[in-house]
Image (cartoon, rainbow, N blue to C red; front, side):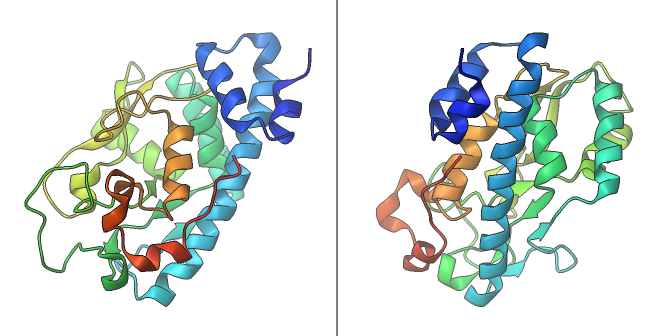
Length: 240
């Protein structure tokens, strides 16, 4: 049987991830193959994130937190932290583990007139997501942030359950809201990302695919005709 990884490299990105997701817990005999797919996927995601992160300041984007850049790639130390997290939690979805190891911290929340992106600026959204008032800028945690949430906000509880992976569309617009969550522990290939407005059942890989397709701001997918013209400079067809 042709490996998932070989098929993925041939361009069967959506089909391969769909099949991996339907496996549920990944059998031991498929673990190496599935992990290779996850790593290759997140290497590609990292390239897209880096490209968008480099372009955002040129559009006048300013981070919602001036101490936080749009992208901080992982270091060797992150791998050690992820190893510890996997052991403590009892298993991370392969997509989440690879994301922490290969992509690192992403923070596209901020202010940008050309992208109709507001955080500190007016107008404050008065509607509810999903929709163009909530562009849903891509935000992903570093391994250190995951460890911090585990220790400081969840009391180090490895029983876990629903784990907050990122702020939701409301919080990214500086409006009181919630989080995008995953269920932990998990031995699956991909994680369902809970709490994404208008996208019930979307997985992390699917969400990242949608996000990159919309230049890092997938909230505009709900009403494309209202998306800012400048977004075209950031959008690409995902290759993962």
